[in-house]
Length: 277
Ligand SMILES: [Ca+2]
Ligand SMILES: [Ca+2]
Image 1 (tube, rainbow, N blue to C red):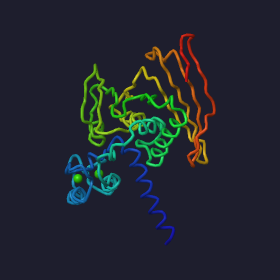
Image 2: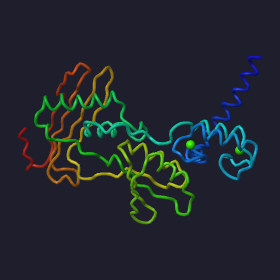
Image 3: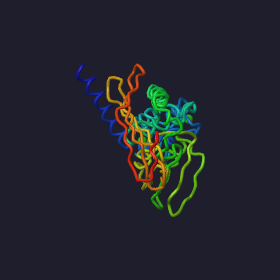
Image 4: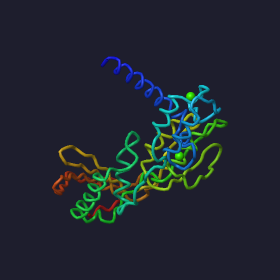
């Protein structure tokens, strides 16, 4: 008895794995949202059940095997819920949000966890109190947090791409040249990680953050464990279009209790840099 149940679940699990492997391309949430109300829910489920066993020649026969069946039902259930990405409220401190977004990298999450955002916000204040010269040196964003450059494959169907544009709420599409477009989203997110999601689609050849060149100041935190964070700060000036001639390089460490320590300070640059702190 036990073994039989076990085997059945294995079959379901194998089906789900097979499905989720094919989901990104074959059945986007936009397909599962049969009534197009922005949510995969009970009405979509009822529509699928009412078509059970028939061949509708498209959704809800998501796997296109000629009949609405169990695998189609699993696809719908795998996409259950709202399709629209929740950006949350805009941050009180956009600088802290930007540093947190960049910190996560291409393999990280799309939004800064609240705890990390609060830590960054706190540390910025602690470090600037300890080093007043840094008060006006605001972090220069590496990229625009609400934009993505995409290069599309010419002639490919764009269903999945258009679905992602719905999910992430594209508010503007600017045609740059050839098959390159600049997408603008309704909120800020880790566009380095979003680029990976777009690039997984067969119709997207390239996806890249919209880089900002000429930045002067870079605040880069690294959690070291046990509540200690290391902050590497590059305060640059003079001819920053290609990397700045002059740099004040600070390393600070902060801890969970709110202590801040200057670990090192270096002045690097050309003879004409004025290094009065
Ligand atoms: Ca729906
Ligand atoms: Ca089917």
